[in-house]
Length: 193
Ligand SMILES: [Zn+2]
Image (cartoon, rainbow, N blue to C red; front, side, top):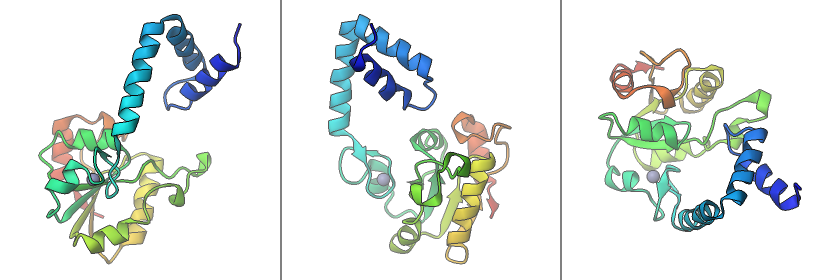
């Protein structure tokens, strides 16, 4: 009953973080059993993939080459470094109005993810080209997040003021699950790194 088309779909879905193999298989079955939902997903996915790209400066979603944040805050001298777009969206709920750089993940030697796999090398150029005066590391406070922070600090030390959000980040250490008020406090009480 399970042919290669279903297997391919389940394998593709299982590549999404947080979707297990079993869940992926269930979703594949569901989509194929409910054709109208499958068509709706296909249509919206095609639309989204063809109209949305990643900003060439910060990796945020953009409909043009440069995203709305990079355009409207081009004069900002503060650059907030985050792991992913979910974290950016969360920080956007706070009064922070600087620019961002999404590094697209965290260093995780066990999973074989190294500095070169993330968008870190471009940071030096951005700081120089955009006259950045302060870099805020808004990275997770777990083992991988701390390691990533250390690597970025080593790379940028002496070139720019670097600070870290710290206060009140929950014990999971994840920026994505920190509420707005805590994140706001943590950004305004950031510590020099
Ligand atoms: Zn941007």
